[in-house]
Length: 136
Image (cartoon, rainbow, N blue to C red; front, top):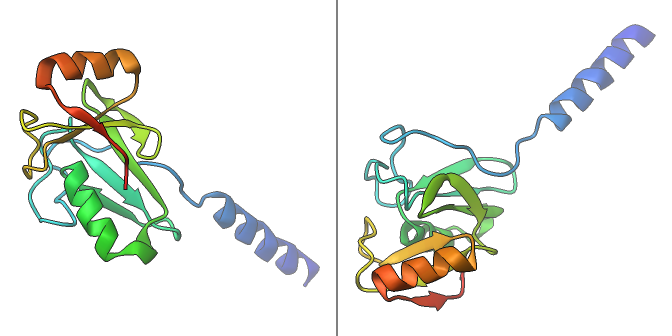
């Protein structure tokens, strides 16, 4: 009986330790946006939300993530965006430098992109002429 009790605790602790956090990287076309249902293909704009319980929601753009998050505030734990110049690099949306500008061709027309560094910010500024916005 004691072994069964210890085995139960071991399984519980193992499952608790496996709870996911952070982002999940994925390939172009693998998921649809949880807001607009478009296929996520332009990886420079992709974004994710992880709920407090660990469920992931995928978005084709920062604007879709923002719209969905406003409608589902209880499902928002952490928010992640990709670096426009390095889509394999995920950024905490609260720490990312986010730009809005009419010349940014984001998938849903919200004209938003994210970068990680001031150097990338200056590069995007020259390329698109946008301005910094605070993450909502």
